[in-house]
Length: 247
Image (cartoon, rainbow, N blue to C red; front, side, top):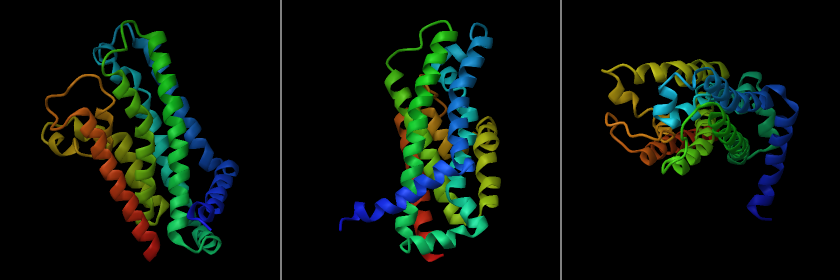
């Protein structure tokens, strides 16, 4: 029997968990609503007066993602973190004895859901921005910004899932990742003395790919920023795999 056939039951079990547990399906829905809704609301309220939303359309279009990414981080953490805290991970390991297959199913489900949220959220954010903010939002950077908007949620969810697996604790993961993504990382990026280091954090690097304009203070380009986030994500996913195999 082929490997995909062997992995299908594990993926199906994870899909059933997602459909039946409110704690799992609510964060992606909330992320989608925030990504598109906040952009539209802010555009309607400040689109004609706030130059931050118009000087770089990427900032305006993905303004809502600043809030939606917190829900995405929670989703990635909860996919496996709540099983660690309730010890249901032991039951999952009995049902799927091979830890790599169990972990792979969670990664695949998280990535697929995040891809859907990224695609729908990006489309909604662009539509909301175009409807509320005067001026052109298209241009040569449109394709790259839209592509990054679709991929950023996938990378963020997989990164958070991997780090949570390494930590093996829901509370620790929530206390580390959510404040870092939502508050600490943007704060560090605004401090002159720390910005040189903060620019290499995964969310900072990934969000630079969303922007239309160049930032001469950063040491890399837009696509390189997305690649840096992908490298962070790959390292976290690999660390999670080693952790779940040895735990």
